[in-house]
Length: 161
Image (cartoon, rainbow, N blue to C red; front, side, top):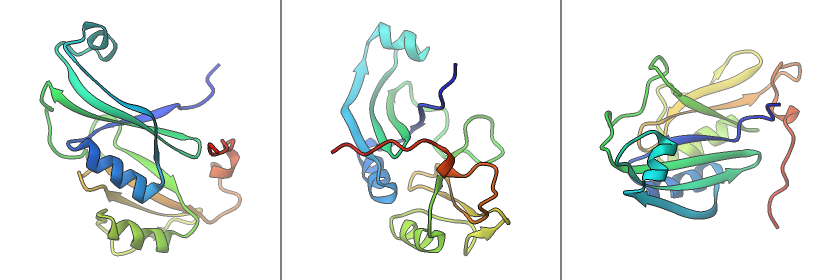
């Protein structure tokens, strides 16, 4: 039985900077201890990469986990974020309650957006943007209560006290 997606992972070039960005921009908090490995055949088996070395951290906000990796070996094959049409996982989406306010706040934290304002699609108002390292993030505000996939249909996870 599939219960849902546990986490999404993103490779970043500066782990500490990006932890701060995702904390300040989206309220993610680091859970557990940041981790790392080098010359570890067991981890190499898990990630299917011989000679891998990386630092990482698991972050959490609401019912979503987000894993960040900063690989030092092997060197990445690309140095820019993916485009929406590239092969692979290209973005994640954050649902917000006031997209105009979040759009401005996220710009002040270093996100860039190709459009001057979010776009009304009918059931959501949405816009794609890039974090400070160029990774795509969509922000959306659900505006139609009859939307087929509203966030409030997902179970809530209470914050740690």
